[in-house]
Image 1 (tube, rainbow, N blue to C red):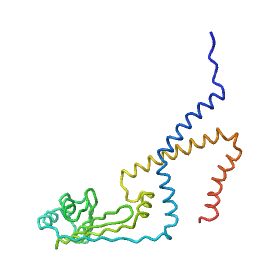
Image 2 (image 1 turned 60 degrees about the vertical axis):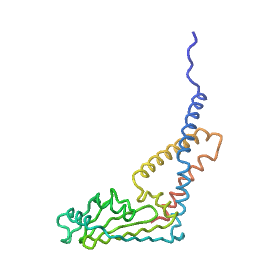
Image 3 (image 1 turned 90 degrees about the vertical axis):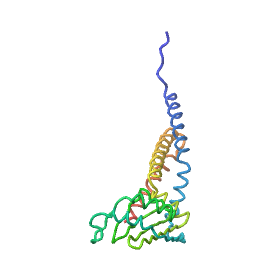
Amino acid sequence: MTETQPASGQQRRAFWLKHLHQWHWISSAICLIGMLLFAATGFTLNHASQIEAKPLVVTRNATAPAGLLDALRTQMPAGEGKGKDHKGPVPTALAEWLSQALDIDARGREAEWSGGGIYVSLPRPGGDAWVSLELDSGEAQYEKTTRGAISYLNDLHKGRNTGGAWSLFLDVFALACLVFSVTGLFLLKLHAAGRVGTWPLVGLGLVVPLLLAILYIH
């Protein structure tokens, strides 16, 4: 009866190569488009002061009905109007009216009650917006500022005002990049014997940014 011989070094190397290549190409496929986006926006962010943006401002006005104003006055937080500001969720009735009258989605946003009025900040990638409502006159003012596609992509890069879904994507993308990088490092190790420039280049990738940080960033 023949005993099973332990796997040779060549067999172990072939095993790790197979699995590392598999994880490497899967992670690279997942993060490819994201890496292209982040590389491009890394350049635009680094040269943000040299890339001109022409903000586009849109304003709208409307007058809230008396019934809505009466309902909002009853929901006014205690102590409001005495020099105190209060924050809380946008009332459902107000959110519905803003959607119909000004085409604004304020659901789930935070409202600031101040001086007999309500102010709602509506930040977004690549711009900003806000809406205010005077409870005495019923006058509502809405202003939206957009700064163009580059600003929008830059904010996606930073995760600024992008919401929970994009935040989750960034976490998945970061994990895929870690897998891609770590498997790449192990593949370099397995192939380094036949490529003499491998470790000098890896070391250069560490030393250059380290020296720049030490010498030029204060």
